[in-house]
Length: 182
Image (cartoon, rainbow, N blue to C red; front, side, top):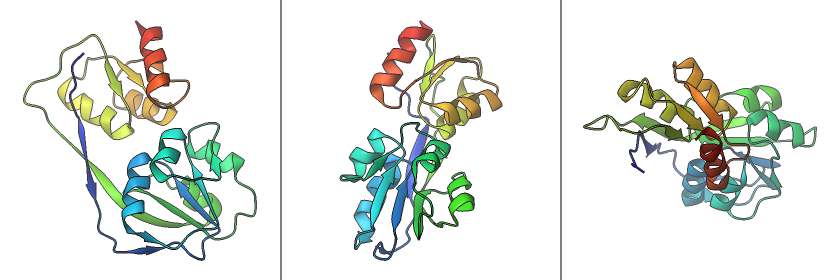
């Protein structure tokens, strides 16, 4: 196994964020949850996470989406949802914002890393759309195993061949997908 980071997470300074007054806080990544914990004050009414890793990065949550996509999260939120804060990555899909009229705050951005040498292997495991896009720059012919549907879509759009997709996000899902691909 070769480890080759393809993206770097860079915090975006927003100053302190007041969560009081929000009925729901929606988190779609562990990086976003970790970054928000550093600068949040107050407590939202409820917290929803897109998946287990994101929920664990935040701590106590009220809802973990069964399907780890923005669509899956939206399908499980009660309506009307009240005042909603969506905290995530710069350039994140705006589906939640558009559907719920949510406030949005960008907490971090991902920037591609270019390794000195292209990684070698039979396949690459990509855990974010930005990592899939970064892989194309260094190993465009390498097939991939993806963490989920949004990452698979980004990989295919970038021209990568997706051998398998994790049926559930996280390490266990990726390991099963790699086994299936092999």
